[in-house]
Length: 304
Ligand code: NAP
Image 1 (cartoon, rainbow, N blue to C red):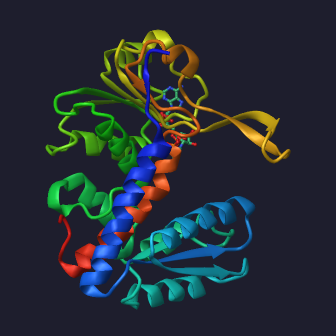
Image 2: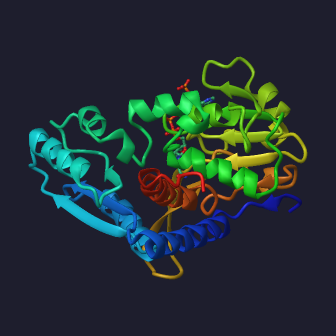
């Protein structure tokens, strides 16, 4: 292997350590800690495991964590009233509603009811607008793109003037990371191209990329010959391609593959993220950082 492996788990631990230290400092100086509420409706096993991971992370950092589990038959009105209560609760700085919500509840309506200043997922239209404007306007960059940016920067890649190609234009990954890398700001200031299913020559664009970010959800889409030698390759894709028996637990687990042909690409790229263990561990970490920042905005100490 010639490429440097960008280990999301190591960078995650580094950032969690920084957050924990800040939480302790703020607690000592101001007597408050970040407060996060996770609202889980129903008993979808995947949602339970996502929420549990978020709760564990928040608790390990010394946050106040409220786990608000609601029954499957909660009405939209009741859910909106619950959100309103947390919007008004001064000890809560981040509100997270785990998706998907049961049929009959309008997800958009529910997410848009969250106070934009507590929307630590960063999906509220107000926060999308802030992200587009950039600079000091930005409060909560969406978590996966924020994690991608950290992976690039902390791996030592220069973003200023870099040719960045983003494969995919979803609202949760492709579009926001493209906007973030485009901003005239530190850790960004790149020349950005976004490609998608209507792009005429995907290979041509990928080959130009000094930083290639792939978020298509198609296993092995990016071929090794599409990679510029020495490029930084961030593989966001998480694709279930089968099942295997875990050696650790003896239970069936999913076999996961990224959007890049990792084994061949690692011989050409300068640095590459593995799947799993690359972008994945960063998402919850960025959620924690957004929650900490929400408190810092409230205290008037953001940016310090
Ligand atoms: P999505 O909403 O399905 O969007 C996929 C994007 O890729 C679309 O813009 C689509 O183009 C484009 N695309 C798909 N096939 C393509 C092809 N053959 N050539 C060019 N472009 C193509 O997916 P997403 O939510 O952004 O997620 C993408 C992947 O990242 C998934 O595997 C997902 O599981 C993973 N993911 C991982 C994390 C994490 O924390 N690690 C977080 C979020 C997502 P069109 O717009 O033209 O359809």
